[in-house]
Image (spheres, rainbow over the protein chains, first blue to last red):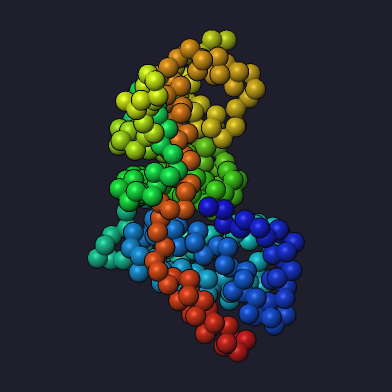
Length: 214
Length: 81
């Protein structure tokens, strides 16, 4: 999922200038490429569809009201995702009955608490993308991502799901590029470890002798 | 330089992202050629990364986009302050 697949920085700047000059209806087109990424980011933060949708609406309204503040030194998509993330974090803080997941200390430099050894195996049969037609597989992946500790889920969300680059991810999270890489590495290893035993049943059957499936 | 399995695992994520020095990359490639555990670990991790990027993992509620743009239209209709 690329937040802004086709709009160049210049095209984005032109549309923003037109919106600010009064062609407000263009705002719909401006944010359309980002609406999915914003929802998914808020859903993984808030874990509730209704809350995520409400927060997405509020976030895009803030984007509109603050559009004159966008300077173009960051990518528009990074700016929007940051606004959405702040909206989500604000809501998390307000949830008194459902206390916020404790923010974890920055563990990047220390010896990691968790076990970041991958699941060992000697043979891997690829799980093709078509297998995602199966609901059990989608749920399996979704659960594994949502169950990651927040600092790891954040980087997976931005790097692997929203497909932002390392620097954009670092900008949104307010951490260094080095920390993004460390966290992403640990997150991917944790996901590999958890998912590999489960994914085996979705793998492409191996061709045995004479092309028979085994 | 000869590298062991643990060393390869430390670089899996950067390797997948194409973010390792050419020398180290060549070492890892040489290791992967003869180590079936590391090859399987590498392939499975890459597979997980590819699957995660697929849009189908997270479903968007039906009508989300319509409701969003309706709400935005209300805001766009407000006079500028």
